[in-house]
Length: 377
Image 1 (spheres, rainbow, N blue to C red):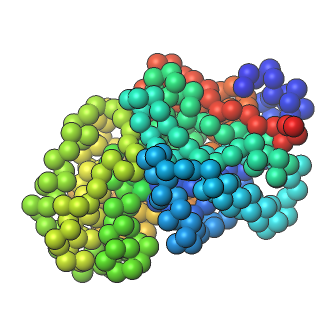
Image 2: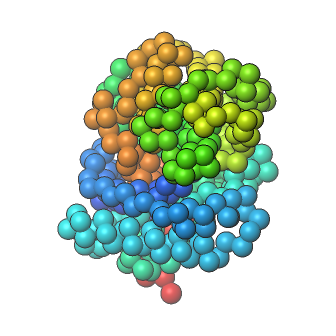
């Protein structure tokens, strides 16, 4: 979206600070995060109300059935979009905000296939329906332009991390542990439109551990890391899982949720399997440091993985520097990705880059996203 078009469509100053709403359905398949922020799409970010909506087991199973993009998706996509519509309405009601006050919704949808080497990425979710149902303009399809230009299409939250980290001591690493884990390394003096930034997927996040807990103890995840804490790491099984060519690849690089599996742990006890899969996450994160231009002085962690004490203590032990949840610097780890997509939607409307070479390997800073007007026929 060209910057000069924004005022025509939205009838506001293209450098204004606006209220935006972001939506995220992540690879962990646990639910929808929704968040309001006020931003100019550059340095100004003021966090607003947030909402988390959990998926029930039926919804998780429906999404899981589409992973890989080989099963019919239409019915699941409609159901997923309806859930996002309800989340938007619930957040606006809770915040006491009218749809007319929202400049744009940033809609990620749910990734069911990610193959950047084939220039393919697929996020289900009907942005046009979301815009019409809410009466709010929507920016969706945020990964497509980057993939088409030869980038990885992921991670996408990195420029938001850089905007928030403006006054923090650097170098710093921001680690997101969702279903897949990704890191943003931010160097000295970086800003959201500069290039002293590096981002990539590090390896498995919580997906394998969640699936293990579901199969072995009937729980959607290892709550408070209790199962993993009761077990011991099987070093032989872990070595088999760590023997993966992905870890040798030089960034930029990104993953699909289904690129790793936990089957080598199948012969272990529930507790030992959980401990080993947790170690798979934190030790693969430690391998990421070999790619940093400089060592990070400390790490801050967002995503559901930050609630697992076994993963967090494992990170601190293997990284050898302070590791804290993002709340330690005043960020909201439960809403951060939803906030990021609100921020990116505003940047899209202003024609600002969503990705740069250091975040996805795209050849040059590139805007992206497609605008779906609320009043489209």
